[in-house]
Image 1 (cartoon, chains in turn green, red, purple, yellow):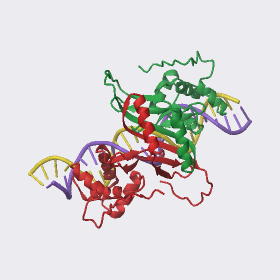
Image 2 (spheres, rainbow over the protein chains, first blue to last red; image 1 turned 135 degrees about the vertical axis):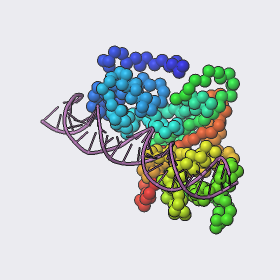
Image 3 (cartoon, chains in turn brown, green, yellow, cyan; image 1 turned 90 degrees about the horizontal axis):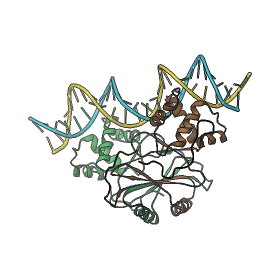
Length: 163
Length: 163
DNA sequence: GTAGTTGCAAAGATTTTGCTGGCAT
DNA sequence: ATGCCAGCAAAATCTTTGCAACTAC
């Protein structure tokens, strides 16, 4: 359903070239092991916000010899490097998504009826946030905004599960 | 800074009258046991965002015969009733604070160096958020904004504990 | 060759739950 | 009375870690 309309031409191809996140790993001086490469690729191709369990599932599908401990270690490492960001939409487990390049920041709107997550951006908000932090005497390191809302238009029908 | 300027006259007095949250429990038809009353009181008087462990500590100080399981069960119950709100500022454990009456909304700025949480409000942000939701075709049910920052002024010294 | 990585299983940390007795209404 | 509630400890989850073998650079 959420099948990328923006269909980036990120096609990682057979297995020759590094995935986007794999590239970042290299730039950060990380050793590219087989496992790490697979996890980086799964993360690069994820359009959603998978939790560790789900990442493990997707990575395992590509390469059996990956343990969940490695997935935990990897996402933790990538988060420290700023390559990944941890999200918490409630539900106990941490979820991850790739950090945006540059200053591009996106936000989440969660449909309270369906659990579906809509992403959006807003320059004006970025601006306001920076002013707010400044007023409080802080340098903004990062921030997050989550809206919970209900569709105004009631033409919602199928409403399949969220994530 | 955070000391309520609106200083509600919430003085819970000796032990006769119910705490604010205790009152809410009653209105929601919950049985007021000794333990629950103590926990409600601790929550009512909390000016910060204690986690379960901390709530347990504070409640235990007032009444030894409280188990941590009861604290867990109570905050969960109160969250379902909408009396409490669960927060996640990173760091693994859930933290709680009383829901705001009315539409008053406040935000959090987390000092990444100390973990300290500063609360603030901002009319302009409320406005912007509402416009954003509207633009996306949603009725805003609730939202949360968290800033992570680092003190600009380097006169930070004492700042012990976080929480 | 060396330092960083991995798998596995065990340990940790946090939260939930089964059961029996107890208390509020 | 009776049904919700509490304590306790075991279990369930989620995440981290010790250690020996392994691998990228």
